[in-house]
Image (cartoon, rainbow, N blue to C red; front, side):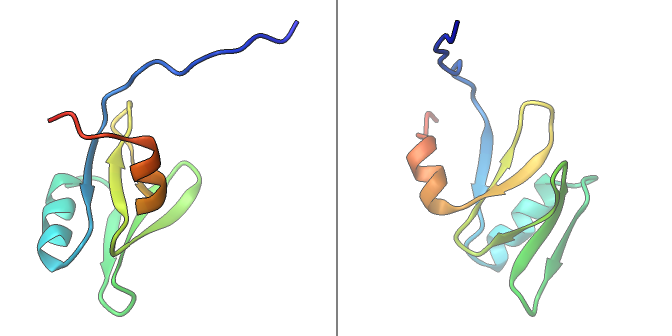
Length: 85
């Protein structure tokens, strides 16, 4: 029998990558995690369980439930998350 399930509310931390200042804040926040910045592409590359993913300017870097980091596009982030603090 097929049943329906709703995701439990989960609070996550996130920062939007908008410029060099937020880039530095994000990389400091991610200290000890595998992430690099490419000045030519203006992206932060982060190693995820799905391989290396790029966080482009305007995207959000999110810390997941197990401390992992991954990028989310602005359109998906604003459709999925709302600020609580």
